[in-house]
Length: 85
Image 1 (cartoon, rainbow, N blue to C red):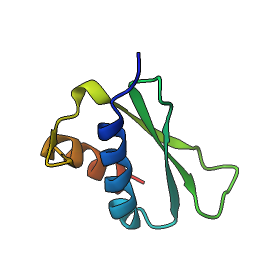
Image 2: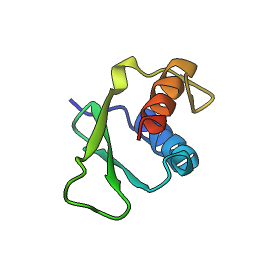
Image 3: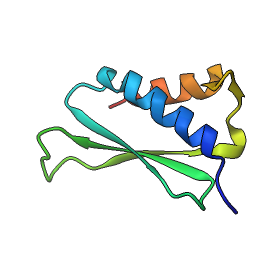
Image 4: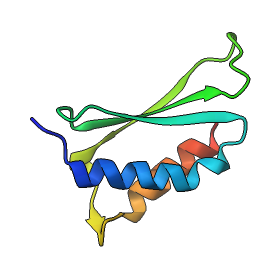
């Protein structure tokens, strides 16, 4: 099953815009074209081995788009995850 490309792209745009909120963390979006789950991954900027990697999985079936923008509940979920870093 192929993942929903516009939704993956909207998640990537949102992360690129909001990732500055996660100071001292490197945030990347991992999306396989055939997987409906988009994985957000974060590593400490200083890459200390003692700090665990953090991740969030977003299922594209749960994401809604309006004018190519993410719905508010998805934005809130991602913002909370970024704030927890």
